[in-house]
Each structure stands twice: as C-alpha cells, then as structure tokens.
Image (cartoon, rainbow, N blue to C red; front, side):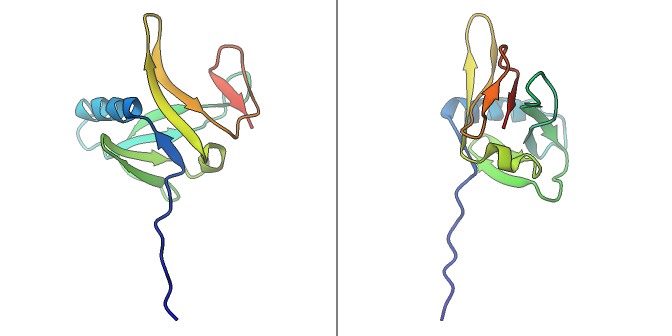
Length: 117
C-alpha cells in the first residue's frame, strides 16, 4: 500500500497587496535577511497584537510560507491564533499597514491594535 502525500495549504492567505508589501520590505531588508516573521506577542488592551519583523534565521517550529515577494515565517506559538486568516496591506491618506481578517479573533480593542481569541 502506498502513501499519498498531499501538500498542506498555507495557514494564512495573502492578498496581492500583502505580497507586494513583503516584496518591498525584502527589497530594502538588511543583508542576511531570510524573510519576515508574523507573530502575535502579548500586548495591547485586548491581549494579542500582530507583529511583523525581519528574520535573520528561522526558529524551530516556524511555519514557512513562500510568497511571490519573499518568505513569510509564522511564529510557531502564534500559528493556532492565525490559521484561516487573511493578510492584506492597506494604505490611505491617514494610515498604512497590514490588516488581518482573523476568524479566530473573538474581539478587538477600539483602536484595532490588538485582539483576543
């Protein structure tokens, strides 16, 4: 009996704008940067926040997502909070930043900086 191995879908979907922003970040990244890491550190009034940082080395447990703009590493400890999320990049006259549609978030603070699961 043979085993069928299927490719696992990425835990997070990225829009074209998010891919383009990662590409722009990687174009001006410090030398030796492997990609960017998405994590959910504890902060803000709701408990968890989204954080994007440059990655010089992968950590054990990171989920690696290859995007057209570069590699997105998802922190292993944050992965369960982010599965099924959609990551976008939005810019307008007043603000610019990554925006997340997260089906796991049960609430968020009024300013949108943090969320709770």
